[in-house]
Length: 206
Image 1: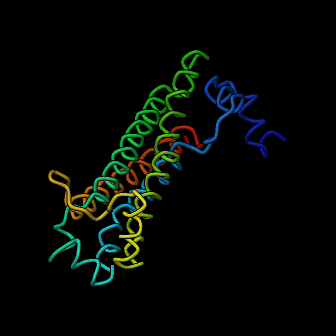
Image 2: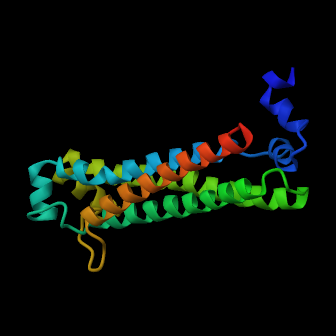
């Protein structure tokens, strides 16, 4: 029965958007609200960079951060900020997709459905794939410090660059963490709002 099979129901639906969505190939077929929630989790992970850096061994903190980790502006903070920017921008794009879908309902022709889905796939790839890789890279640099100063020096010796070196104009760790946390909350609230509106309007998630 199609009622028990969401894919069959979508393919037989009168909605061009749902039909096109399940006919085309895509890595991220989750509902928009689910993808927004996942991206909010990535942002919360990036906000966790501050407490994790604060737990680094004393020799690392004294050698590279001086008195306060929160007030420091290391290169790893720039990497984290780039990750925050990618995930947040992709999240804003997905909020736009969700808003368009709520406004138009099933009123999509196939050309418009393909265009909106192309943009949704782009935002999903940027936020979940690129943003996920950037988050992993950030934590790889952050966790390196738990190996001690010698580990960092060995990484620099092979040409890796010092992730804890200060930057002249980079953001402080506290700025990155607060920004990531605030944006993560915004995406989570947007996901909850879009979910509630879609359930009320059509009885299904976006």
